[in-house]
View 1 (cartoon, rainbow, N blue to C red):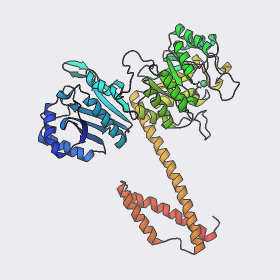
View 2: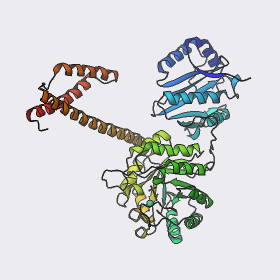
View 3: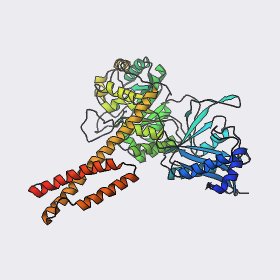
View 4: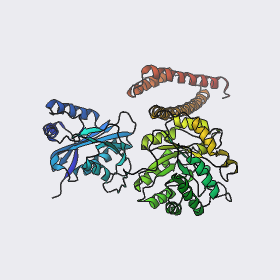
Length: 534
Ligand code: PEP
Ligand code: MN
């Protein structure tokens, strides 16, 4: 018989059933936060908490099967990380293994993404709790990492795992290729990893010699080399194609370094896989085009190879996130971001303006490793050292640096490439900070970037306000109206103070800011009255 499974909001009438559920539930995998025995007062606390926070900091539901409350499920905002929520649930033992949890998780995640401002829902689950792991995977949650708090459950060590669900596609039938064992080609390391190699693979000698020199630098963990080069103008060197892949594979065999190359079409993907390239990156010019990104994601469906997604040429965070979503939907789990800077109208010493806040915001939203491609940000050798340091200070997970055995003779990007020897010097001059303090810097840089954006909006608004005020000044002048109209000003200020209070802003702040703005307006209008030359 088909069960009727619904999620319902808690009401005070549910108290007795809540107490019964909490006292009977199997606690093997539950958080110690759930009191035992579960008393009347505990239930009162819960009902009050739910009423206060429902729809604001959390979604709380009873799991009802055929009219009976058999479990509880909630998603609560994470107070420490913006945009993240955490799911928790419990289900009475008699109702396990019937697909109820899977349905409940699917439903609550949909509600949480709609009602709370979260982009990602995390789930903590013990490794041995296979049933819950399956529930999460069926709902599109993807394994993220082991949390550092191994617990002793039933006398044995049990890892607490973190799974994440991004805000797209909450389904119960997404095929997720979750790869939790084996060595991922993007190595997890406490210090940032270095990916180095030439902009383009030019000759067999060039790539083998470069790879050999790089393999002697311990920090270098991966060899990069462009096979197909996107060039701004026609008739420039466009890469060696398939022949280059033969040499790249040879370089890997000679040095043991895993390899990475850029793919822009499904044919590139096919060839790169044929020649055992270990990781692929998607170039900045490709990421701007969702059609191309989708074609690549389709070509990679079911192949769980590491894919590094460069930021699009334009500073468009949504487009960058969209590319991640396309690959995630195709089942790829080993994704990383490459920050290579943005084309920007402002003059700057960089080839591509860094706009650090954008990659920071991306990693906060997506929880993917970040590689900083300092070569394409800088466009010259001089800025590399300082830019690499800045990236490390912001807790980057890796640096991509273009290296060539003879940079001055390089067929592409000659100005920004350095020799393996120069890379060694550059690395020895870097200060690698502890990840912990780096994360603080990264978080702060994201918030500071946000403040800068808000300030710039405030300035634009102020300028617009002054402009409108000047137009009013012109009108008053032609119609012989006085500049200051005290009654109107008093009313405006009182309204602002009251709206400000609703927004949590003090009357002093509102009064001071608006009096200064008003004063500036009066002065501007008075000047218009006096000479009309504005
Ligand atoms: C490259 O890495 O050589 C390259 C072409 O980069 P981007 O896509 O960032 O311009
Ligand atoms: Mn290049």
